[in-house]
Image (cartoon, rainbow, N blue to C red; front, side, top):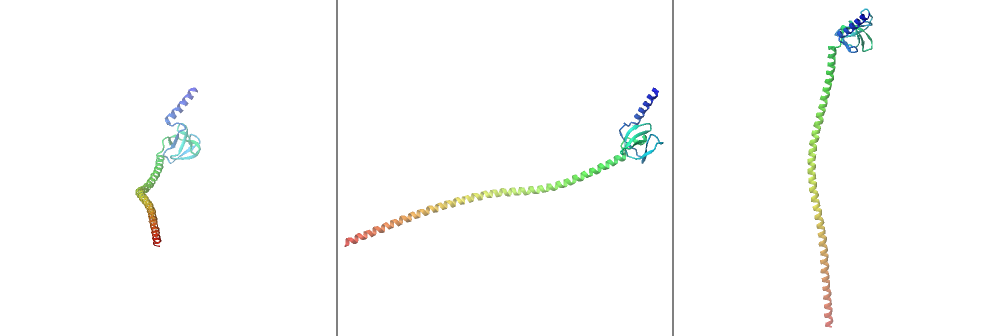
Length: 204
């Protein structure tokens, strides 16, 4: 009895090694249109689901010719081992490549759009940079002109102030000279009148 049990265990281990698929691993339905999932390991068991090529299955147990699997809906049953594989089917690979290619195309289009937008921004920047350079040059010229104007204006005001002071000084001198001349003339008149009066008295 013990030897029979050991032999059975050996057969189970050997069959697992021959299948080359680890329990709990994801397996796929091979490139066949549809296969049946049954309640037990044999064609006499009831069909509970129809599986299509590329369907994703979780391997629960791998037996002699039959594998116990669970589909994505959580339903578990038995399928013929020869109809499942651990290799990703070419159809799924093709679909993934198409999806990745589509996503990549979207990324490329997005990059193109961003590059076009960047080119527009660059053109605007170059225009603004040119305008800024012109404004900077004109501003420099304006500052130079303003500095010259301020110098000339200051010189003009200084000269105007000097002229006003000179005119004021000249005006004061004219008054002094006028007053001096008038005083001399007045003294002369008085002296003349005094001399005439003395002369008249002497004649009397």
